[in-house]
Structures are given as C-alpha cells and as structure tokens.
Image 1 (cartoon, rainbow, N blue to C red):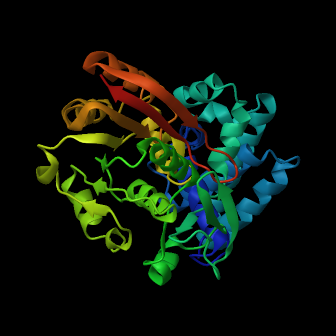
Image 2 (image 1 turned 60 degrees about the vertical axis):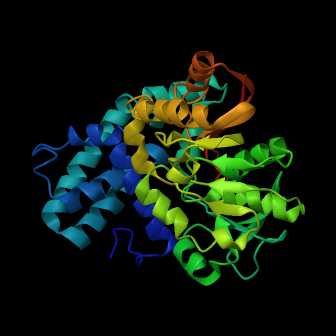
Length: 377
C-alpha cells in the first residue's frame, strides 16, 4: 500500500506519485541528500521515497506547525517501514525544519534557474509556476461531436475552438480510452488551441503534420473541419519509426474524413501549401503531467537542439511549398526552443515569421505550448 494509505489507482495515490516524481527530479533531492548521514545511495529506496514525499510537503505546503506534519510522516515511516526508517525520517525532517526556520526555502529555488527565468520573463509571478507544476494533472477529453461526452466524471470546459470535458483528478485515461476509443481523444487545452490557430489559417488548404504521432493535433484539425462541414485534407506522418507505427495503427485515423497517414517515404518528394512541425522538446510546458521531464530543464532547453534544427532544415523547409505556411510548435516554455529557434531558422532559410503565441501552464490544468507561423518567401 502507498505511504498515503490509499489503494493504487485512486486519486490520492496518483497525487502522491506525481509529487514523488516531481520532488525526485527537482533540486529537492540534492537538498534532502545532504540531510542523510549515511548518504543517499546507502539509504534504502523506500525510505528515500517517504523522506522525499515528506520534504516535498513541508516545502510546498508551508505548514504553520511543520513539526506536526513531521510527526505524521514519522508515524507513516514506522508503520510501513519500521523503527530504523522512522528514526532516519524524524532526524532528517527536523533538521530540514530547523534549516527552513533559519533560512526559508522558496519552492522556486528548487527549480531549474532557466525555468524560473523564462516564467518571470513573461511578467508572471514565479509563485504561479509553482502552483501550475504542483497541480494534479487533469486530462481533457474531446468528442468528435460538438458536445462533451456524457457519463464521465468531469466538467464541461469551454475553449475558443469548442467544448470538451475536463476529467476529475485520478480518472484513468486508459479506462476512458478503453470505453470510448472510437468516439473521441485526449488533448490538453493548450495543444487544442494551437491546433485551432493552425486550422484558422489553413482556409481549406491541405496540410502535412510532419511530427504527428500520437496524432492529437491532426485529429483536432480534422475534427474542426468536420464540425464546420469544411472539406480538408490532413496528412499525418512521423519520421520516428516507432511513433509512426503508433500513428498508423490508431483506430481514430479512419474516423474523420480527409485525414490520412503517409510514411516519410511517401511524402519525401512532395510539396505542401501548409506544414505543421510540432517538434520534440524538453516538455517544460507539460511538467504537471510529466514531472520527470524537469531533468531536461536543467539544461535550459538545449537537449533537443540538434533534432529540432534537423527537422526544420531537412524536413519542414524542404516540404513547404513556395509561399506556403510553416507552423512550428513545441510544448516548451524556453525561448531557445521557441522564438529563438524559429527566428534563427527564418533568417537562414528565408522564411518570414507572421505570428507567434505562447501559452503558459496554470492551476486549471492547461499546459504550456508555443506556436510560430512562418511563410516561405
């Protein structure tokens, strides 16, 4: 049984797992490691997990009476792991409390500097970043009809392209997919808004989604066209063989008119009036869903530079027809992966940036995403 006393699969367990992942990949691990006399590696993994969860709670929740929380975690450690573990947890957490009393630990100080700088650069208070990243993940379900699904635990959610259903925390996306695989798909609101912005600029022209897997943006673009009764040809492809197989085997591809899957070999000699390139990135905008991605944030978004530049230069630039539109997207918050990358490419390859938009994570469950619209000269 998990340390919070819940059963696997319930919302409390999912929240606990999320916090453990986030704490483990943030700077908190280094801070906690310094509290262990025996060292991090010599401490049993289960003990470390309880300690990380407890330390995360103390730092993020800012209790008025932190030692009461310490006592609760000591009891949890004693009950599930034994007296030696509870002694270690007790000593480490009390030392953490003493250090925090002498010099409070702002949660943002445990985040990668580049991440907080990117956030502050938008004019937002950094406390909002902590709230957005520590908020439990909420999945958004989009039906192929105009109205959200009935009978699912959640609430209708409006966005500029339509309506969807925001599921309750802890509701299993796998279960929903198993029950309703042919009636809709999951997509975060930020990604849906990007797809909507792309759709509005197409004006009926065919589009190639060059990094389409698992297919969310292609599906959303085709869905919007179908809802408006607008004929539209959407070609979905992916250069990654494993991801292309996922795309090719999706039962949703045949669900929408005009949506087709094409292999990289099938499109290599074609030119498209519109190309969508949603590149692999450090996922700094989706840390609430994938907290382990924070490891890339310590590198300030430079992990995927080569693959992004290659996809732009060898893929998008070659496949975008004269005067065509290139939609460059990421789920990143870092300028180096977003505007800086788009402007460098535009200068080198004679494209012109016509529009940029950045979406930021929030406590309502929206992820971060970026879109640049470039026109080939």
